[in-house]
Image 1 (tube, rainbow, N blue to C red):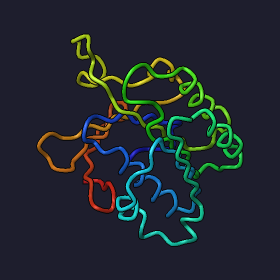
Image 2: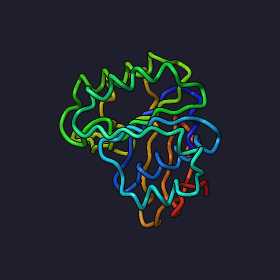
Image 3: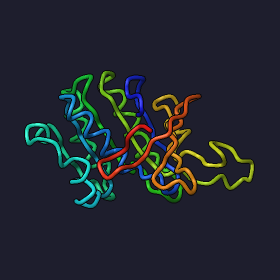
Image 4: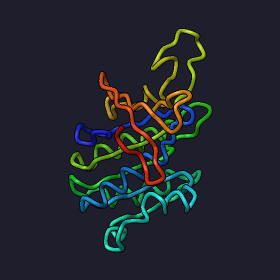
Length: 194
């Protein structure tokens, strides 16, 4: 669904686009393919959603996943993550869900941590997520008037991939990656191509 092979990705998600389910879908795919996952989340998702999307995995696959809930303390948890990153390989994934708050200015120290992650292991697949916000200038900058959190602070370290819910189309989302767009649908078992 999202090409992870072209460098670190910042998923900027619009309202109702369900980036958590996209993260769980990517985690499932990586584990099925034999990779390892470090899943870092501000707040962990409800257990039923995780079970729906990851429940089919075997114990040996789940053993290759580490879960870290950082709450308001990304900086402290990042120290341990930075120690693990060099041990990961090309098919492995570091995913940081809600790396910044959905309101106010992005904290410079959090943006620096995200950039630091990309410098430690160039082979590692990295995905971070945040919520898009509306362009208050009225100029409709960004993607249809939606802007990326921390865009300037992350410039050059991550490419932006947008998730936008299709209005009045139950569970359908458009993934915009550069000039390409893809329509995906959310099923109880995660996102699938249409």
